[in-house]
Length: 369
Image (cartoon, rainbow, N blue to C red; front, side, top):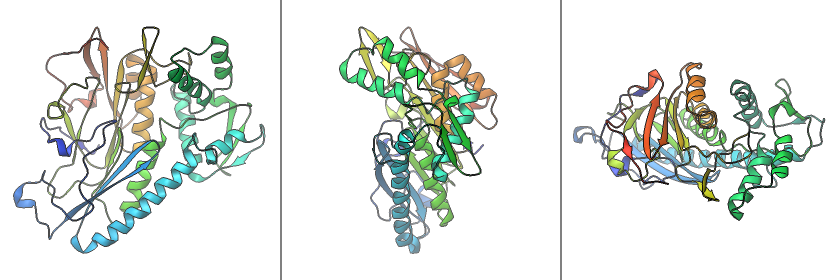
């Protein structure tokens, strides 16, 4: 699948994890200290790295190249950030002028032609809505916005407000026409939230642009969504640390994997949550209840592309461990590991193909949240 056996040790400088900004190398020729000394040939290859804010996070872009191609790679980085910005302008539910919000404002029963990028997102989301029984739903904008207000106020939303928001939620309120890239709404007041799929799509787009320009030894990281191209020189893959629910672990103690021509995403509530009336709620909102999840769960998904790993990690978290892992087992070329916090103890369960990822030999006790 492109992901290799993990290594048990990893230096802090090399680690990339969810909600943690990677330590970036300067945007200039430099050696990668992770390579054996005999393979650190600056004349043979150099590593360039940059970071760009978009979609509520930082997109980290790293690529190896020959010294003579550095200027062209830097120019390509500029093209990548322009591409990411264009996707952000289309996908954002915060920007009033976004293409996504134009769809939300469009009249009911009037088909709207959208960009190929936005239609691709909706087409993939439609399939996931069906496969997950509605758990994964990008039309959940009414309930996610209601939950944002609840997090700010520290009060649960009124039940009648949740019911009205849920009435305006559901992919069955949409029709998609692939031949014309048109989307038709059949319900007024619809709102959309691409938070569980857009960053993975953006990382894929960035990697594709770099690869088309001849820079194949590339890695794109957008918070917990990481997409890797070919391996760095002299290495079996890009080494990635897997953060779980236990944030007290040193990065050197985290399990790692070596990723090439594949993607990995983690979804969970390790950092973003709110406590209301003594109950801990995740930022991930259930499409059944309209409230943040209360189970301590995180899902890490390995797949061939970022849109798949991003969306499926979110789907597993929403479905829960048992249904989520069965959902993954029904897919080809996708593997998953679920971390749960049970009575203050972190417990891992994986699909069979995730066996190369080493989990702690003993359950890790955690302080009560």
